[in-house]
Length: 144
Image (cartoon, rainbow, N blue to C red):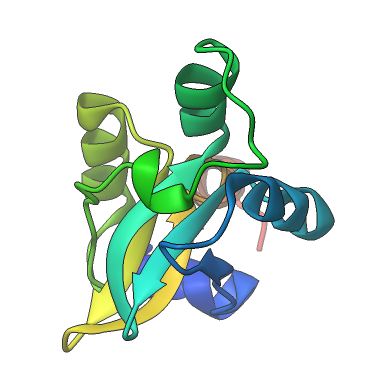
């Protein structure tokens, strides 16, 4: 069974983050440069929130606000769900779909060690299924 740790071993542990006082425009610029859909909001190395494209669209654009004058702390999502490295992909997928979130910080011993996205989970699940199918095909045809 594939776990969150397996995803992190494959994709790496890089986590892009900003401080709560960062201006939204700077965060959006960083998201574009790093080609990511969300940034964790860290204060003293602790996750205090997450800022996503969804937050930007719903809390800035739709309200006619400007990203040049608002701090991340004023528009971030502050209730952040996290997972641990040994959790299964099925658990992550259930959590993501049930709570309608696209990103999960990975925490081990109260320390942030990575971030996974729904794309990472789907990719890993598809890979796992392809491997199972290949093994079944080999079993049925007698191939090695």
